[in-house]
Length: 62
Image (cartoon, rainbow, N blue to C red; front, top):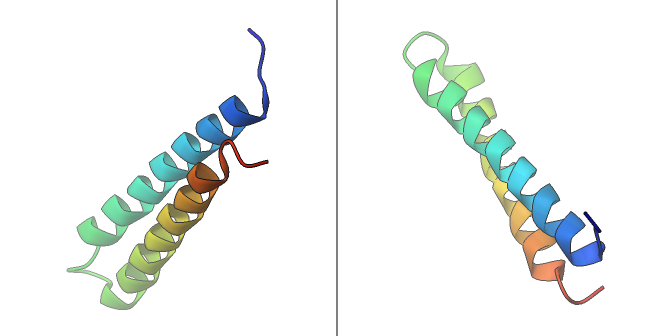
């Protein structure tokens, strides 16, 4: 399996999106008990999605 730069960016974006989804799910499920921490977790999840989007946009340009 040969990994070039584009495949590495693709796999990295996928892993970061999975982590962002996990943070969003954690934030949504704990919102009723700890709303302050849940908001922070959701904001971090959205940030992970933004970073994954940037990695996906970089695919093929570097």
